[in-house]
Length: 246
Ligand SMILES: [Fe+2]
Image 1 (spheres, protein in one colour):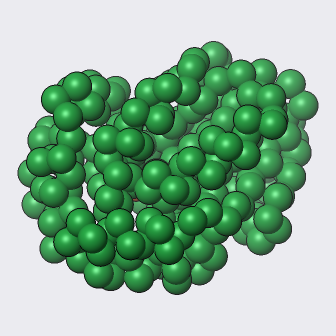
Image 2 (cartoon, rainbow, N blue to C red):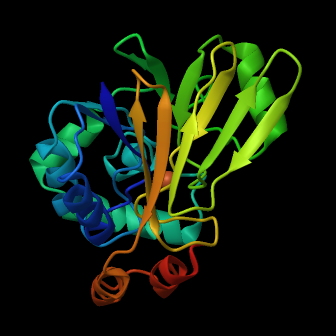
């Protein structure tokens, strides 16, 4: 099976659309979404509609999905994130708001092949930035392979019996074969708001038969996404950061 793995789309219809167009030429069997479909960007309904159109689909919620759909009030959000979340809540159609509200909490196991979580499989709102956090997650779980999001940073952590290693992906199309006997925590990066200093949108394809993960980086109509954010009256830094990849 080939899985299309998407995370942190954040209402960026341009980035998400570029990926959906790109993968039309590639074979994939199931879409897997790791949370944060909305928040920050200017096209919440178009983004929800596009994800809902991908079938088959396995999806879990992110922290922004909870606040944007009214499940949480966002007390821990910064001012800009909260402003965008409350704007999104107003804009969402009733159907899309209900759909977001019903997204399950991670972790989930997909086809017995791998686990998925938004933050970590232990705490959906916690971040994995580096090896210490990754090691802690490995110690408290037993999933051989887990895809996660939330940090908006494409990275692979690998735990062998001896050591933990970090693979930072820099190529526009990075192929990585998973070894037997090694455990992995894999972040496909963010579709709609990358934060690794590279503004290209990021996603992964995982082939469970060959055990190859490919992390792709693609250009998209970034200026159009920025203009929509400005035109919607959302905070300007939310537009600026797209070009910086921060
Ligand atoms: Fe996010």
